[in-house]
Structures are given as C-alpha cells and as structure tokens.
Figure 1 (cartoon, rainbow, N blue to C red):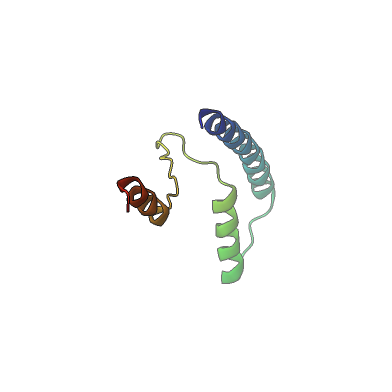
Figure 2 (cartoon, rainbow, N blue to C red):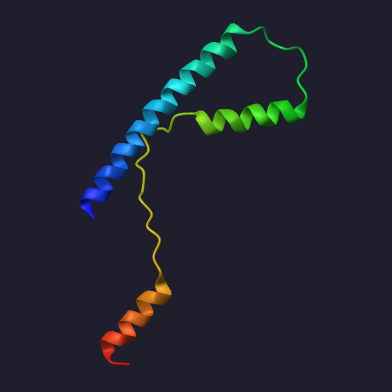
Length: 84
C-alpha cells in the first residue's frame, strides 16, 4: 500500500510540474495579446473554466487524502467474522 501511495505522489508531482508549465505558457500568451473591448459572456465563462482547470494547486493548504470505502462489503465481512 505504501508503494502505491508513493507512486501516486510521484505522479501527482509530475502532473503539478506540467500544470505549472502550462500555466506559465498561458500567462505569457494572455499578457502578450491586446485586451479585447467586449467579450461575449460565454467566452468569459469558458476562459474562467479553463483558467481554473490549468491553475496550479495551492501548496499552502494541506491536501487531505480521501479513500473510497465499500461500506456494504465491510458490513458483510463483519457479519461473516461474527459467524452470521
């Protein structure tokens, strides 16, 4: 389990590096363009969604790992252990 957690952390770090590169390219392109006078609302929303998708994560907030548990299966196993 620890090996899988380490591998997942390594992949997350690699993805975060790539996200930083994409973020820097995006900022470079945005600030090198002329500002548009009037943007349609759909374009503004699409741009906002895109920025949220590529924006690097804030490392100051601790990330809590969430594991999915199969509670029904856990109950069945507990019943089997009790002999029922």
